[in-house]
Length: 410
Ligand code: ADP
Ligand code: MG
Image (cartoon, rainbow, N blue to C red; front, side, top):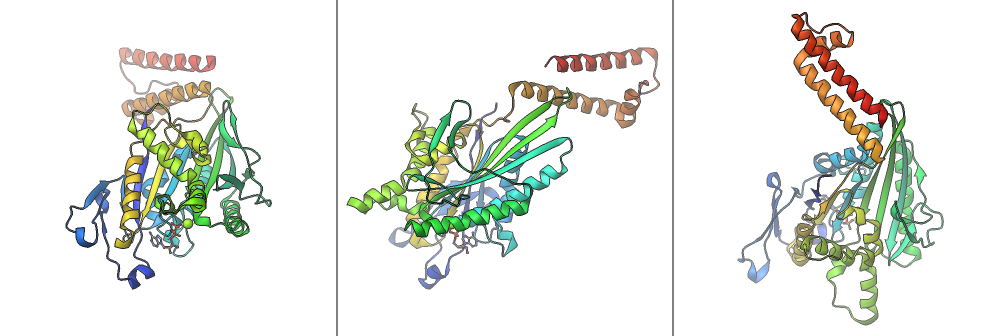
């Protein structure tokens, strides 16, 4: 199991109408090819050296979700089809680009990561031979440290978190809808999205203060060369976080402060978990401090491939928020995960052998050429050659037999 760092990209939206009207200046610049980003302090301290950062990707004002998906989300979702867990977080100040997750239909280049993942997954599994897939989806929201099922008709019901010795933390009674095509996924996403705003109205809440997690569960069953069924299970979490700006609004006092703290508990806990993970000294990682960090524990220092999309405003009047997002994102880069394919350990061994055989076969093809292999499989000597040579090829095939013996014992 190889350690793998959390991937972090930054995305900067264009100036919006309000900022243009206010004559805001742009204080954020990027060199996309190098994943480079720098921010200059506005006003009297504009001559200070700009603060510089480098990420796994930097996407400036004219970038599209399509680009981001193809560059960096695609391989992560590909991993989920293979049986890895994957998580994509959208982080940042309200109004700065977390629409990267849900997306819009027009222009089509800004279709979100969630619907793109649906399409990708169903395309991948439709071409897979000898493998059967089962796909489920769930959609939940965390508001004020309460978990709600966005796919339920009883949107106001609070759900409980439970812990299972093998499966880890899960949400009790969360609906997992079976889905068999892209259209069904889109229906579910639309239903949950609508529920999110209905819920927000009912509870006098603000949806930018809630976190939502859309999860796609993928189970693949293939028949191994031993004739048995082998199950791999990948899970993709698509997380739209609450606006990060509230976190720094510590000016409020009394009841308002208490409310703000509670609303932000999950977000500040996320920050604390990230800090603890990267500081290297802390033995204790405070996952249990919030619902969000408990649910996503595996995405932070665990068995998951994780991508964070940090969304930024270029306007100088957002300088403080933008710098704080950049620092947050910069810290997250240092989190190490240990993703592995979710399968029975026996099956993992079998897969290793299969891969080994594939590699050996590749080597043989390289040496004998496709015609030679065909001849070998048909029981002929691959190339008419002197006696000594054909002994070698016999030896090769006996090695192959040993391999399949091993296989049967598994
Ligand atoms: P939030 O981060 O709170 O979810 P949004 O991402 O929905 O906010 O941003 C508000 C609006 O700003 C979007 O609906 C979109 O019109 C525009 N916008 C945000 N980011 C970008 C971007 N990178 N490129 C183009 N438009 C953007
Ligand atoms: Mg949003």
